[in-house]
Image (cartoon, rainbow, N blue to C red; front, side, top):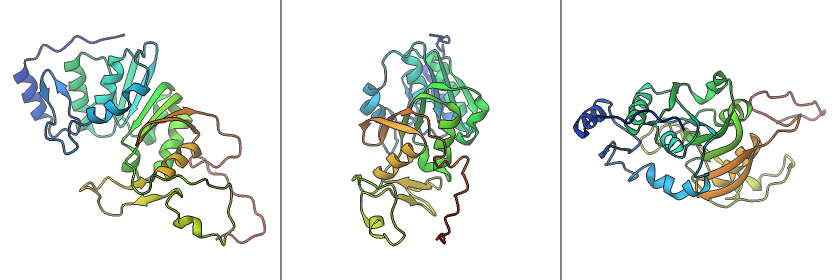
Length: 264
């Protein structure tokens, strides 16, 4: 495991630097200094991580990890602490990346952080053994496209997915097709449903689409990810699978065949 030299900064120096880097969304313990002690979700994301950390291998030696939407780097650091050979964190917010680089420095973790959005993952030019996609989907205007791009370009084996979920926790069995006159299914609580946020939710203008459980699972399958387990209410461990030729994709949509019927 490649480790960087641990920081020799004093607690007071760390505290000043944490303050200089602005408001933190990740609450990290940096040399005894908490970066977001008053977080509205509590000790976040540690409180979340404790609910599903058992589902990932404790020993990641020999593995590469991509952390998409890494924010201040909490999960990137945890992956490095488990011995991952290489960890890359990407985010398109330079403020978060500055926080992540400082946090990794203090923790003595050799992590590469790059300014890229999920829509730019092809620029990485490689696949990773594990891709973390945690707390990102509902912040995207084009969420299914993002999942398709992860499948197409960077997912090697395991995708660790997490999204805020709202609505019913029920999951109905969905048929392969329905006649045009079938409308009742759209009223069922367990039918896949993606809620659109036109303005704000939780005072956050970047919350765009929030799925119910059925929708999150359907989107993962549609993008080519087989769900292996659900270790926490919002977290899924998924295996990348090949999508059969001719299946529908958001990245490269195929023109539907003309059947002679009028399309709605």
